[in-house]
Image (cartoon, rainbow, N blue to C red; front, side):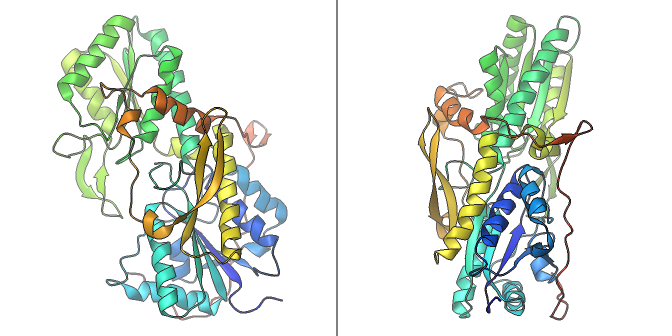
Length: 420
């Protein structure tokens, strides 16, 4: 029998990944090992919105087999959302609503699985609970394909996206090379990464296989004439080239190559596609036949080619989040601390949320080649262990077998709440 405030709440936030469910698996399986300390684990249906609406999922209704299958299932099994809570000063009512829901359902542990905005929400919840004398331990579980969280060597989700982009760049380039004599000479692949070029850097790994690659990073201001000269030189020398462009590539004045003039749910500039913009530049200036593609959701959902390193770390960080809570920790995030490149080794450390929230980690300049269009050996040493290994899901009839949960709802106890 559980006592007051021993239940846990888990939610997935922001853009999902191919391994975020591995973190969920780590959280739930570890919690189930401690029935004397943790009662039920409730999940928010569609992330933090589920908590605000008191739309909770009772994960105790899921079998051990179903929870174990989360480790090899992509996307967010419980639903995610792009909803950023405003500051405590501007919208205290939402934070107080969360406390109200947690109190009504005996929740004393809050595990929030997301990126920088989620870390900020988690930190604010820990502050508010203390000011309200409510016994809540808030632990952030890192997740972001952008790999831009500080104080952790890498972020779950990134290694698998990097593997997908590296392999896709290589395979597509082989295709272009085959056809270049009479057809396409330039292939442009757009990848995610608004402010940090970690994902784009992974595409440069194709150069290790003899592929002429030009990478456009958000950290390097776009130089149109310089870029076109580089592409022209590679095509004349090799007969073709591949361009990997980050969605956040921008002009010297800060304007994104693909900016549409609109905003997304987080107030960020809505980007409409850097790949076609770059491809048209090549066509107009050099008259080379081209093809372009946007990796988009494909890169972050590709569980069939997930990095074994990434899957393992995602699970371990979910596991460690529960252990930290049981140790009495609050307002912290388990993180990856690299101890060696070759052979790759790491340990799980702990970072204070106050130093994680609302801070982005960019690509170090020493990871980008002097000409700004490739990566250095230091970057290769960083990237290669993160894409290492395969962790294939089971297959049946040629298709991967993914988990489908019951997602049973918890009975509501409070009045409806209007979400602003």
